[in-house]
Each structure stands twice: as C-alpha cells, then as structure tokens.
Amino acid sequence: MFDLISGFFRDLYETTGWNFVIFYEQYEWDRFVDAIWVSLYLIVAALFFSVVVGIIGAWAQGSPIRALRLLMAGYIQFFRNTPPYVQLLFFFFVLGNLTPKVDMGGYYEPMISSFGWAVISLSFFAGAFNVEIFRAGIEAVPHSTREAAEALGYTRLQAYIHVILPLAFRVSLPALNNNLVNLVKTSTQAFAIAVPEMLYTLAQVWSDNSNVPEMMIILFIFYVGLVAILVFGMHKWEKNMRIPGYG
View 1 (cartoon, rainbow, N blue to C red):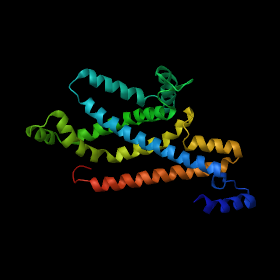
View 2: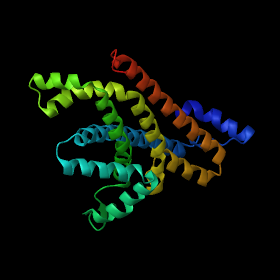
View 3: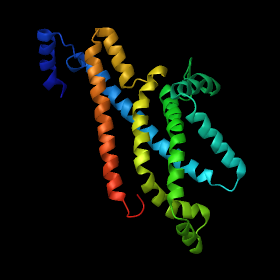
C-alpha cells in the first residue's frame, strides 16, 4: 500500500507544499501504522474492561453487604467527580511509583507500562459511568421478572447473570453507546504519559516536519472514522437485540 500512495503524496508536497510525510517517507509511515495499532489496542482494551467494571459494579450496588455498596458508591463518586486527565496522571505517577519494578539486567523497568496504566485509568473512569448506566437498566427490569427467576430456584447471582443482566443490557445500550464514544475520544489523553498512540505519534511527526495542519487533518479523520464505526456497530447491535417492551 505504501508504494502505491507514496508517489502521489510526494508529488503533492512538491507541487502544493501540503506535506503528508507519513505517506511518502518509510520511517514516518512505519510509526504511523504502529500508532494506529497502539490506538486500537488501547481503545478496545479500555472499552472491554470498562464494560466489565460496569457489569460487576452494578451487581455490587445491589449487594446485601453494606460495606460493598459503600465501597462502590465511593468508587463512583471518585471517578465521576475528578477529571480523567488527573486520574491518568495519578495512576501513572503515584501508583506507578508504588508498584514493583522488574530487573532487566542492569536496569529496572516498571511492572506496568504506560500503556497498561492508560488502560487501567480509562477503564475505571468509563466504568464508573457504566455502573450507573447498568444500574438504571437493572431497575427497568420488572420486579415480577426477578420474582419469576427466584421461583425457578435461581440464586441472586444466577438471576443477575442469566435473567436480569441480558434484559438490562438491552435497555442500557443507547446510554452505553454514548459513554463508549466518549471513551474513544478520551483515549487521546494517554498522550500525557507517552503512550505512543495516534496523537502522541503525530505530535512527534509535526514537530520533526513542521506540518501541523496536515497531521491535524489526519488525526481528525482517524477519530471521526473510529467513532462512526463504533456508533454504526452499536446501533446495529442495539437493533438486533431489541425485545418489545425492553427498549
């Protein structure tokens, strides 16, 4: 692919001055492709773990154990009422300094990389909102449905997994879609701890080549495309999972 487009973009630069260097210099192209994969890995991991946190947290909110409910309430308040950028820096610079380091033979590296801390921070941030989203979905499930599950001999956990959550998930999908889109956009803040995702890499490119407008265009198109794909996929999923009476 690089060979097919490099000639066009080199000619474009020479004739117009528009410098899309990532499309005609092999070195810049390679780190651009690496940045795409890092961004995708970061986003997919954060999306997955934030949903897992939301599902577990929503179950914990309804726990008969008061200490667990208070712990979950504290978690939600902390992550919903502090900026995600500050959370990211806190995880990396504070908790990162408290975690063990691995001896690499003469030098030490953190057990958790900047990428790992970005996934953890973003997952907990979005997960706090997902907890409330799933809680609202659970409350929308009729009480008679829960009673029917109990009458069939389900435990609280079994009823949650097999009956309540599948129905609540359908109700929660529109709000969940909005939160996951917000998470995709928030993932660019990993730039602050030197995760080599798209924003970090293209910032290096425009620093080296003084082509800020061109790289900002690429950055804009990349995230518009990602969000469009996510929204389209979520809407299709929502439509296919729809049950009359449950959203």
